[in-house]
Image 1 (cartoon, rainbow, N blue to C red):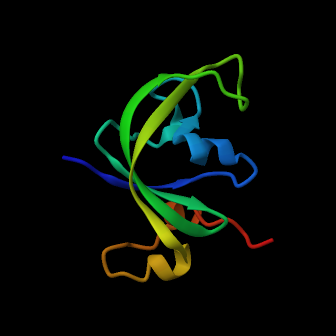
Image 2: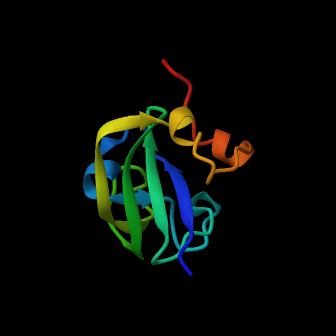
Image 3: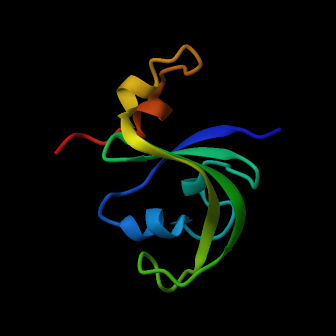
Length: 110
């Protein structure tokens, strides 16, 4: 059964969003939070939900974040939000339980 996650992407590294990957090493890295192929990820950047992605696979990709470790997770885009939604507003839905893990996905406003 697929799970749903929130994934925080650094706005200073927009290439990850543009190319739909997350560079954190090989499968099993704690940075991935246990996501598996088929899981869904709400993409969060600048404290806003901007898209819904589905995990395609773990793979290899030369990337500027960590050139010596090419391990990444690759995504397929399911939906791009035309108007990004602030995470605080997004999680008001009764389907989300506000906890510290979810709060860690919210970046402070600059």
